[in-house]
Image (cartoon, rainbow, N blue to C red):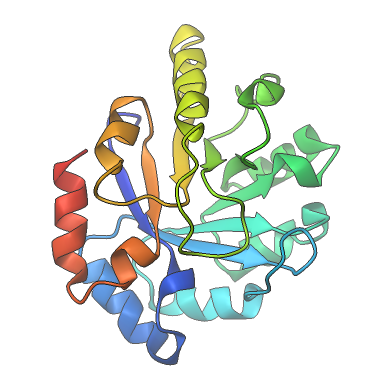
Length: 219
């Protein structure tokens, strides 16, 4: 599973007036996953959308939905987001003191589970859950808004996670979100990243297929 690389366009940067068309276009362009950022205005300083919109997206999408919960008390919403259509469900390390319990609940509901860390969180704090998760999402910007610049010390986190994964023969995927573009995607891939979330780097272009192709050529 680790040998495959995944491009996951973030719908946060899509045109929501024409969302169904955007989904069709981005899938036709070669998206492997659709990344959905869920923000509550408390854990992060922004508000996006919830289960109702995800359900609508699921009804037209043909690729898996990679749902990233940037919300407080995520354990209260696990079933709602899974019912709405999440295939991967990622929660933040910083939001729940009972992380292992939430991971087990998502796995009990037969979905892929991820844990995300903010830029100031060291991945070594995840050591005792790494054997239970399907992916680790490294936030390479401070979560809340699209279009931010990549935080350079994210490279060290990805290297640490990849080294740990290899040393312990684990299979979790490493996902990176924030400031990912065609100029840095190759280096991120070379040091161990598997899933590349890109929002404005893709949706700001007129030809989604062309930019995704260029990104994939660098993987």
